[in-house]
Length: 493
Ligand code: BES
Ligand code: MN
Ligand code: ZN
Image 1 (cartoon, helix red, strand yellow):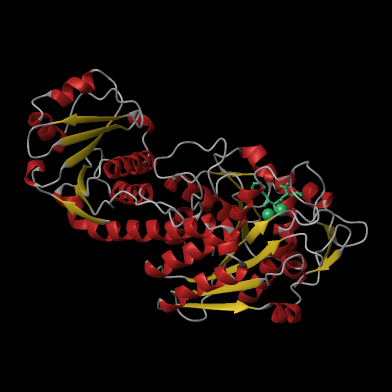
Image 2 (cartoon, helix red, strand yellow):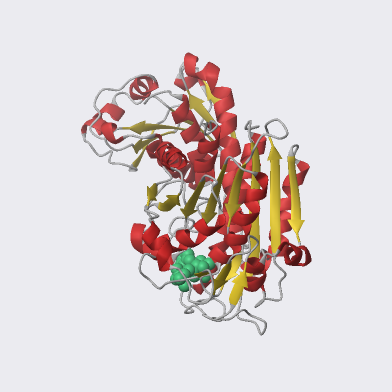
């Protein structure tokens, strides 16, 4: 969709629909909304007085004038407003515009005219139009081709870059959603690595893939163990983006990409097992973040590490009771082959240390327990560096991608000691999200590290809160958050 800021009287544009947001209980109109009210000979203020604008509620007012429809959407209570409210409303609006088969519309931004809001509006409207319709044979609705954002002159002058930024971010989230939504048969580790290779064409991104043979030399016992039950070879994808001077220490992003998680020999129940095509979401997030960072020319060096494998119970599969040795020499006793994510992340985190990173941040659909703890509302955060964790919490607040921190105390690390190896890959249900993170903590050395468990947020599930910019399926969670984090990044002294 083409998006541009405009600063002309509202009736001098040729849009078949103009949309505006209204706060609950708001009575005084300002800016362009006053002109719209006059255009509708006071109808808007009458409807506002009737207080029907709850959050997300849409009313469409028709007119005989040039602009045939005015779409008003509730933005909830003014003192509860955040840019995410607008992002959500924008997603809902663009989808409605498409349903109406209109190809252009205007959006009035009277609330604040802040650049933050412009970015949220751009992201929300683009993400609202996201479709995963690759496998649909019937024709779809015509695409919405243009959105004009009514801005005051001051904001307009500064809006160009922020519009472009919002669009880059939205397209990267769309890539992440696509990779997560793809059926596992159409996104095996090999196929995922070819998708990653496409980023190679863009300047300053280098993508390499480590094959199984080399993984053996490197001692990637975790990835290789999980891959043994499948005919599909594992791939270890490395994406390097050089946005800063050569030699400046990078931030390493690690993403779990289990392209299908059947549980392996410790097989999962078949109900909802289909959803485990999304178990590659962490890796998909990392790929999306690298794409966005490169296009935004973020002035940092970044490395993305994406261990990719299937977890299947084939004849060669690894088994409960096995002992696995990882890249850093540590060993783990396997008690449940369904706790596979931590095994492939262990090798990746250990490998991350070779970059002497400023920080390591991993994204993984790691534990069902995280859904029990936080539901589908927030991602779980655990780490070893309060400043990094706080920065992530701040980025979460700014982006609306909710995150909640769980403790990573020594007691949890003790819980996963093994009788026969250094550690074991599960210690039962108690504190399952934290003991998984405790497992990972064995592989990051002393480097600042944060782990995001996105099991409950990477795709829409039973209790996913309604957001206008999310549809059924993958959400692309983490991309907006990570870009915000990196955009505001400063060296950790
Ligand atoms: N990919 C799953 C976690 C998951 C489950 C994410 C459901 C989203 C929805 C992970 O590999 C897994 O199976 N974890 C096990 C760990 C257990 C065996 C210790 C789990 O959570 O049950
Ligand atoms: Mn599993
Ligand atoms: Zn898994």
